[in-house]
Image (tube, rainbow, N blue to C red; front, side):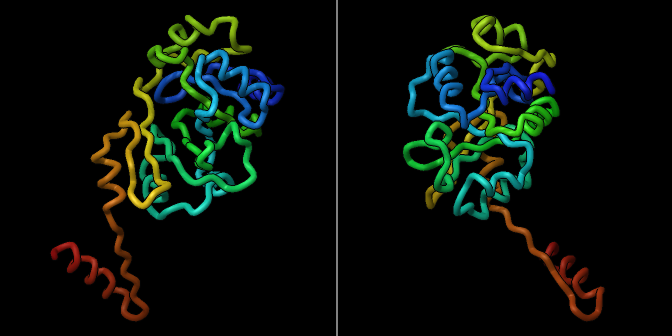
Length: 219
């Protein structure tokens, strides 16, 4: 993992495991690296790659005007197979942000991926390790079928635990939109956003808040 982190710092490409599928990690702030990634994937430019982070708090470094619904989803599903599309802060590289000034962010539930992202110290983008139009790879062998020799390093960590791509949720508008239903069902996403938490705080007799909670649950 440390070797892979050094490769990323130097502008290289690394095939890595996540809990969903295998991906190609790259420094999203390195223009030449991202152009190389576009070329390898056969992906049209102008369609940015999602940013992967290793700490929930990092989201506030990249996104602006974060809605309460985003924090609900983060608390429930991160780290995990959920990509949030949010309004991007000004000043970030256009290869990370879309032309509409949005940014996709995910915190994967994989210790290998999380350590690599943390140790690399760069803005890691990580699309699935497949050519555009082909299925996302679920293990190391599938990942290197088309990419062997096209990347600088590849990490084999066995089969992806979930084997399904992340769900993608757009939180930039007035209404929440599920752009892709992946490992997390749309109903679970919508249910989490619709749910509310009630906190009873008693400033006097400590048993009153407990009684109020019980009464609310009964109602």
